[in-house]
Amino acid sequence: MLVEKTVHFYAAHSVSAFGIEHKCARLHGHTYTLTVWVETSLENPVEFSKVEQAILCIVNKFDHANLNDHVELIRGEPTVERLVWFIANKLRESIPVKRVRLQETQSSAVVLEVN
Image (cartoon, rainbow, N blue to C red; front, side, top):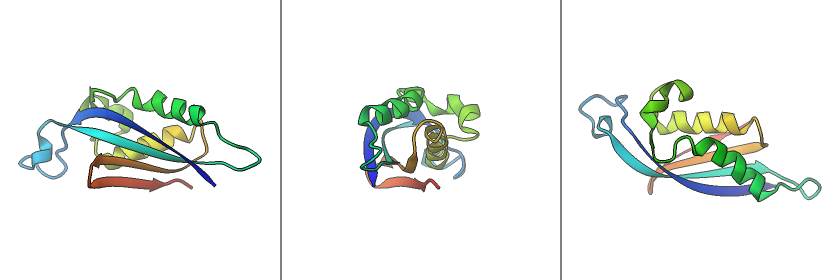
């Protein structure tokens, strides 16, 4: 059984992984949608507020920020793949996260299944 919690944050970044002439190499912003699924059970229910608090402790660092200012924190260029990996690993420290989905645009997202 899984609990699902969704939050939004706003951030800018530039990504040169696709080449310096690619449009993503220019500084641009996104409205990110982060959805987290956490393991729960009838015997051991999870509080939604606890899940939200764990998420916001991480996401608030990135909200209305230039993600390129956080390359040391996320261990590299701020691609959506690196962001979802970083967020999932930080969440594992405080909640039993099973899946993390980070949507960068209305049609593009990365999903990370956590073991």
